[in-house]
Image (cartoon, rainbow, N blue to C red):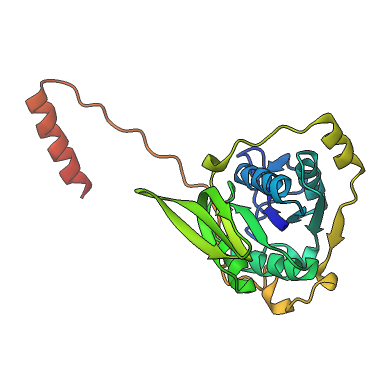
Length: 259
């Protein structure tokens, strides 16, 4: 079984800086980690490989420093890492990102299952996974909390909903986004760390992929951020004191004056 896990390296801190010209996050030089939701996707991919055999390929798009995230994934059991890194990809929104990742997956070749975390902690859109399945024209199942059964041509999963869960069967190949309830990610072993240190991360640029230049990077992103700013601090409120009836009357008058 060939499994591809898509991961993202995200800032480890909430103290991030914005490029005033592009209105995008400045990622270079910022301490980063694997998106927490993606660690569950990596773990599930490794568990499937251990049960059914095959290979786990971890794929990411980002600056050169994202190689460290791929090495971390290898240290906990993934077989190989592929990084998409090119200035041409900078500023990609979720649509351009999913398009680029889908093209890379086509380049990687045959696969059975694609796994993604349900969303990224820095964007919280939950759009990239479904976007990849759309570009590849394959079925998708989101918010998967348990893989119940894998047959020759289909997978049966338990999918989390607001009111509980539902059982869905999807044909293979397919894409699944997973939630943290699906497993408990393992810690890297000493052997895994040694393997990760020696691993050769394959780096792909825009020239290595069959891409439409109008669909990548900032210029290929339909979503445009016009302005990012820090809102001004809120003014301090008032504390009303006294008997309940009097406070209620004062509050009504105060609200009327604000209308």
